[in-house]
Amino acid sequence: MTTERDSDVATRGAALFRLKPVTAQDAGELRRTLGLGALTSIGIGATLGTGIFVILGQAVPAAGPAVVLSFVLAGVTALLSALSYAELAGMIPVAGSAYSYAYATLGELVAWVCGWCLHLEYGISIGAIAVGWGQYLNELLALATGSRLPDALSQPPDAGGIVNLPSVVVVLLAMVFLLRGARETAWATSVMVVVKVVTLVFFCAVAFTALRAENLEPFAPLGIAGVSAASATLFFSYIGFDAASTAGQEARHPQRDMPRAIMLALVVVTVLYCLVALAAVGAMPWTAFAGTDAALSQIVTTRLQQPVWGALIAVGAVVATASVVLTVLYGQTRILYSMSRDGLVPPVFARVHPRTGVPRANTLIVSVFVAVLAAVVPLGKLADATSIGALFAFGLVNIAVVVLRRTRPDHPRGFRVPWSPLLPVLGVGCCVYLMFSLDVETWVIFGLWMLLGLVVYFGYGLRHSHLRTENR
Image (cartoon, rainbow, N blue to C red):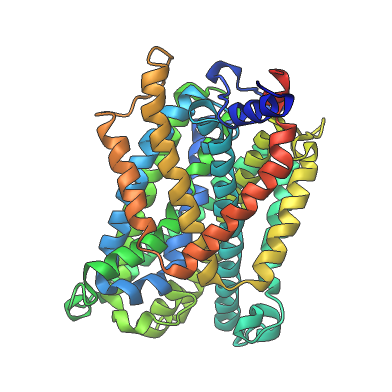
């Protein structure tokens, strides 16, 4: 005999895998003001700069000159996932990115897990990038004035400091831009994208003049294991194209422009990353990269003896990393907005200001949290934790494409992944491969984060889910 308690348990179990129909994705109150150029700028702005300006000093010691191959491997993995993102972004043009795609294909529990991974990816990556911004700001001050900020105010506690004040400053500056509105944010991002592209092209032009063949030998001193480990860390550099898909609710023509913006951003970023990495390891022996905080500027200053050019590189890096903080913080707030619209997180995150069209409280809360994180947590731990969260979420996006091809084969698509399901399956495989290239400590952090996420979901999200309550 079925009891009322048994019935409730069955209902809860069914709710865990309830799908949100593709056609029921709520556009909400955000304003559609962004065109193809703005969307592409958001994708490039959130991606270009992080790996090459901030993480290069950690990746080169792991792979040697073969770090170029590490960028290629990370880029191919990102490309396979980007194809799936492009198809889904055209089908489901809303703000939730991979979270919304999983909700429409794999069910509420998987969507929650995906969204929780995206919070790890976005929130921690902003902190890591902000730490890198502080490092380049210090380098710029040293070149311009001969002095640096004291370690007590520019390093996390584990590095001998008290608080990383520059990282707090850049997050709060990004918050101010975001509070003004999506159009203003896109305009500022476009300007900063131009600055960072010019800076990286300038670096290549200078560094290739100092390229030495002996610096590239041996090419892969640590073998394929080193290439894979560096690639897993560098995947942190490619998460930004996801930010373009979080702008789906603010795109004027999402079905047409979202796929194009995602692919354009990824192609531009991958080409520049590989060129700059080759120029960097060609100009400076790979063993000299260990411990470098602002690698590109130091190459020009110490190896090429051009402090003025080094200062220009540092200026470009400060602008570049600031743009990444701005656009990734934008993506973080939009994912929380979507989860709040679905009832899985408190409603405060979905409240939109009537004048600016911005989720103001959401932006303030996230910015303060990330600023505190960036102030006290070291860069290396942040970068690897970001990579594993991104790889897990991207793997789910590839799976979602395969599922929707079977369940909604006739639904309009602005872009279709070629050779499906082969390429999405390869995308999943590449994500899993890079995840297992990360160290045990990173997996422990990931496991604890997932455990916390499940506690939050079963404690709040499951009981407040709009989709579940609407179907009672």
